[in-house]
Amino acid sequence: MIDQYDWPGGREAMLRFGPATGPVVIASMPLFEEANRTRAFVVTILRALAERGIASVLPDLPGTNESLIKTENITLNDWTSALSALTATLTEERGAVHGIAIRGGALIDAPFSTRWHFSPAPGESLVRDLLRSRAVAGKDTADDAIELSGPPVELAGNRLSRTLLAQLKATVPDGSAPLRTVRLDTDAVPADRHISGSPLWRRSEPDNDPDLARLLADDIAAWIAICGA
Image (cartoon, rainbow, N blue to C red; front, side, top):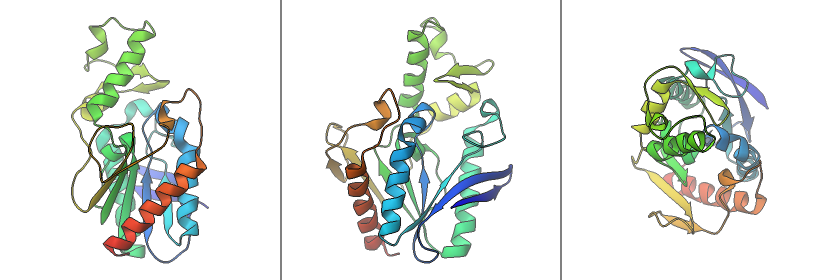
């Protein structure tokens, strides 16, 4: 179901899945082009959660998707403010709100009751990848590629403010408990669980993996049950 939520900067769209009662999850997508490659995958996870009796919302953050705000005018603080406002609203409606995030989505935090991260990535790594792609495309020299001051810059098809890039570079995923982290078995970084799968965010085109989505939905559902719905 298509719905909307309010935040201090305006109103944004969101998708709702699952029952009208019981636990609820807010999903934070990967950032920028990785979001385009994984949106169908995230929706599949949320539909699988609905089948398991867990409701969820997938919000458009300010400056993304159907938002009327230009991406170049957005800061990380705007994203955090929007997600926190949505969390507060859902907390009033449903009680405990669980945050799940994939990749760079884990950099946008809110006062969740619990957190579940899939392959969370530090902001410095994401910004480095964005700037490297721009340098490879011949739009910057090696020196220019690491400059984070000046006018907005186009990266991965998005026009982004240098302020946002600087904020992301200085941010790491929130490690506050209770937190569960799941990673692919090809990732050597420690996690609560490593599973087999392919990093869809690395694909050249949008893709999906229903089997992996159901496996992750099972893990999320078990985590929420352990923490207490």
